[in-house]
Amino acid sequence: MPRMSSELRGEILAVLSPGFGGTRVPAWLRRLLGDGLGAVTLFGSNVPDLETAARVVEEIRAINPDCVISIDEEAGDVTRIFAHSGSPLPSPALLGRVGNPLLTLDVYQELGRHLASLDIDLTFAPVADLATGDRSPIVGVRAFGSDPKLVSEHVSAAIRGLHWAGTGACVKHFPGHGRCSVDSHRELPVLRATREQLMLEDMRPFRAAIAYGVDAVMIGHLIAYDFDALPASQSAVIMRDLLRHELGFEGAIITDALDMGALGGVPNIGVSARRAVVNGADLLCLSGLKQQGPFVDACLREIGEAVHTGELDRADLRQAGRRTAALRRSKPPALLDGRIDANALRPGLVVRGEVQLPDQQVSLVTREADPTIAAGTIAWGLRPALEAAGVRVLRPDLTSASLVVQFRDAWRNEDVLAELRDIAQRRPDAVFVDMGWPTIEFQPPRIIRTFGGTLPNAEAAVAELLPTS
Image 1 (cartoon, rainbow, N blue to C red):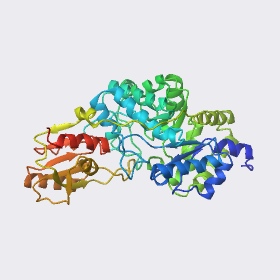
Image 2: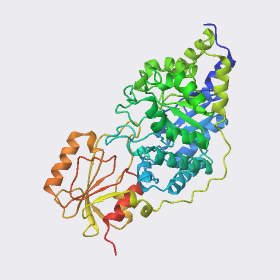
Image 3: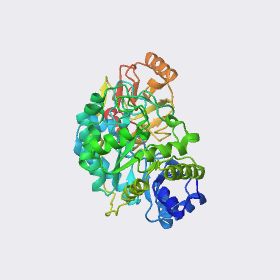
Image 4: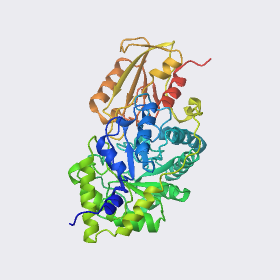
């Protein structure tokens, strides 16, 4: 391949969105931003709190004001800027159970206000996947539910809320991740459904999002054999024939992170990027790993080779750059003045048995399966809501007279599930609070299921725990 011109290098950089590690912009990324890098994706290590997030964004903008800054901030348990403090926004699963799209609009408008106040252009939300089946290892509480009509209504409301606040929305993970039992961070999932099922059910929320004018669609790393034998993020059939031509989407097509195990991980990142842009992707999301300079170099090399051999039309590359650049938008004033009323969420809870606390103190015991890669480690649980309500939280003690056991995703860990069953047998008077995707095989006499571990989810549960006057 001949030496790459600076013009072609700039056109390729315009469609790349690497992440980085830490709270300072590293030297390799500063150089790329100065050379016209199209986008940067923020991850948890970059934005441990709002103040740090604002400083990081300001640092990026000082180098490249036109760079599109995105973040994986879904509302609910998948949070980056609230990972250490706990998300102030309820999970989509609980919002879907409440069934009030206006409440969902308010939640996502509040999310959009936070992001717009930081000058973040785009969030990879809302999740438009269906939470199909009793076990939902990847989607779970991130989705509004399993009913295509209900999910479509809430996805549209979420997009409207984000737009009203001046933030772009990217629905994910097309053509729908809900049926998958395999995590694409690790392996390549296969959608076990017919074309008709996918079009009528799984894609219905995406069609609603497109009709509403969503800014971007994220393509998943998964195979739908009724369409193509290639992963969706590498497939012209999925991206061009289906999403562009059949469904009429005109915005930016963004890949899920290209270093994920579904595509072979880091060793394949350059080839995965090449195949994605050749087959219709506009913006190539890399990952949040610390040192991504070599990833960018691999993408430059592979995509440059595709242009040189004629595999990629340069006009298509430029068009992808224009779609990416269009995601950078001017923001209206974004005042943070909203708060979610926990009582509005209570109808979405599942409450079984007598759960009210006998007094204003409680021993709080916690059990948790390892978090998913998508969510990572986050602050969750009842303690802040209990303490805010004036309840004294005692040290964990299974012999305490007033015992509450909070847990998440025990269905994913047999040891955790066995321990919960043992506690329930020894302490039938204990109140259990399930704060993840429901572990339906665990049915103690007294339980609250909150469908997420965020602060509002916890506040709704605490409202059930406290005696009514």
